[in-house]
Image (cartoon, rainbow, N blue to C red; front, side):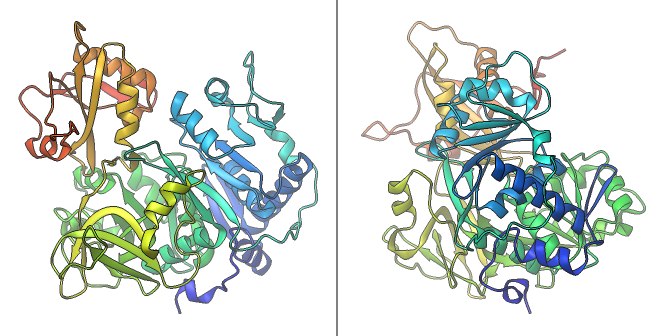
Length: 538
């Protein structure tokens, strides 16, 4: 029986899975972080105590709580505590600042915030309106925040450690995760409790996880994968090794030290691991499955042989769930992203939403066969919701085809969104931020091939008349106004770009032409963009 079939329909993130497992075996290890080991009983008691202290501050059902925190046991417990209250978690990319952060806070209707102290200045600058309360983890000084402040330690204060027993339904809104926009700003996908839980159950099914599995979780909790790996751990009865972030240099030491059997290989991670010098004991690691999205066809066989594991893969998204997959025991089909899940329907259609013949590329449409297995729409964006969910199908914005054996293949993004190192990027938002430079008349953003899979960001800049722009000017401006992962690697300063008769930019022609001899590569010129800022050539 699959994990999704094993558990009843009335699923919430904290109830049933966490409460049930803690009641069955309170002393079982749930996860470890640094040198800390958390049992199910200790974690559940902490989440319950935190929930009661949050409730005492007026946070409860329907509260929209923005989270700007690094991965930690505190964040993990906070997520479950909010779930127990029926509050709505708004996890925000910790690299967001300025206009992007303002957009997220306003669109998500954030009423409260919980932040690490290092984000105090960022929140103070970007908050579009006063908040009912701001909980601060750590010490701040001198920052005027837009609301009353409560120290995070208050959430660990004395309180009962049993569940509050609040009636949180499975179809209640549990969270909002923002994904890249294309012709407009980023959209917040509304996720029900059952959908988030089911995502984790499906992950456990696809990777055929068991109670002796150890799942490595190094992705930030504003990423849906960090959440579904946590839920999958509870479902299979295994353990989770939680890390604040990924380190390629110490990756295999961490795997061996903690007996890791499964991890998510997104954002070029598989390419980075295969690029490391081979070791005689590579195949003796405890890894059983790597969930690679996308599955790197050029190194698939080498990965499985070298590390003695199986690679699973899917086609999915924050909105669509996991409608296509190849499980650990399924045969390998090069370049395919999977076959249709028994829980979904998938069609490849033309511009009129009519099915195309087998083998022909079209738009990918998805819908579930059972309730609450896709997102519930875009928060504060009813028009975009109706457009995406039209004709009773979710329009993914991607293009693909299928063969006569039922394998599906991802061909291209129908939209202008990009994906870089596991981060979704809105070309619209990058263009908007670049265009804030006083010397820029217009900015056009497209993807360029990456050495480690997915995309690199390329921007074509048309200067204002009389402006004297340099590539370094644009790079420094981008580093100042956007998250590090959005900063373009490639920059072209051009007088014009290809356009239609109605003056629309023909991005497909720019992508088809590719990089030119005039394209400036910041990496080739010695520049590096890090999480901590732009590093100039030595």
